[in-house]
Image (cartoon, rainbow, N blue to C red; front, side):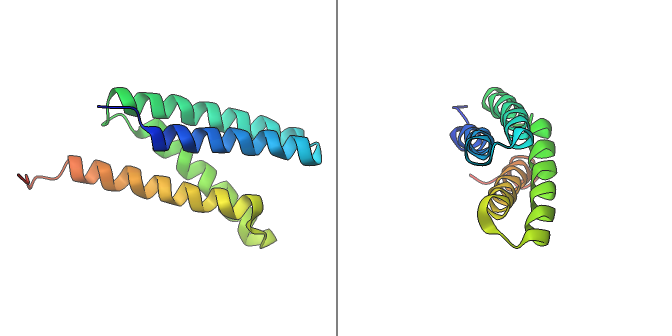
Length: 110
């Protein structure tokens, strides 16, 4: 199995978003949350690269981040940054679930 490039890109985007939140608004919570979530997502992407069935950390972190940012987006109605991270999180969660369901399907194709 190759590298989970999409997972690493998602982790880097989350970490970069935290850094940008700090740079633009001086938000220490954004910096902390972005770096913590980005780091955990990076570890999850590494685990997926090693073993595609080891997706629990990535899925848990993605759904947590998606839930938090979805709540912020619902309350603020501002797409940046909460709406964007929510959309990315939903996309990543769908990717993880579809890939896992396809790998564990009792129907073998080809």
